[in-house]
Length: 165
Image 1 (cartoon, rainbow, N blue to C red):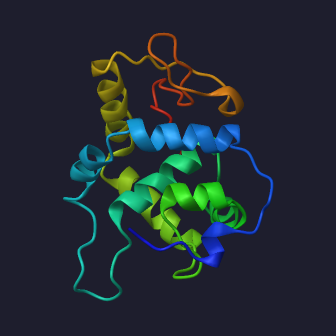
Image 2: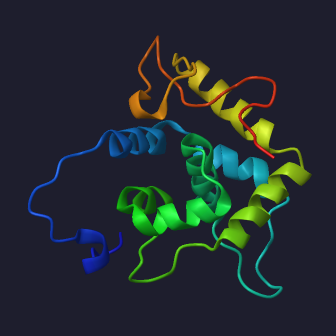
Image 3: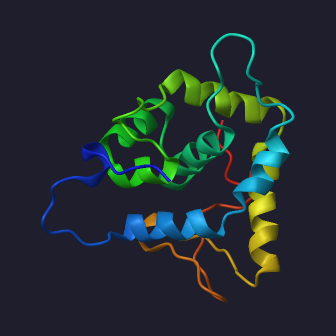
């Protein structure tokens, strides 16, 4: 377990959990991260040539943030610097490392597109939730939550499974 640092603790005297924080905590808990990583790792870059690749789960978590909050690559980079909640969800500690740059985010998204994995990722999540008796339906991110039977789900599982070009 990582030690808390000044960058992650903060000095706020008054705070309360936000809807975003509750939503991200729930998503962190219910999404099958290991299964999604297994789906992608065959095409994900391996260490050895050049710079070491960013952890696959971290990249997936940021990709999901982009989908849920409709963030472009540059806006996602800025949002991660701006939002402690999003950084915690992605596992980024600014006292140890910077936020991933927009080019890295773009390359990951293109990797998923090139190998037609975007739809497979969202289908895997959908099936995982259905096996556990959870439903998904479109809603706004402000009131999105997952509950047994009748859940609001922030993905658009239309023909494109929520994948944007």
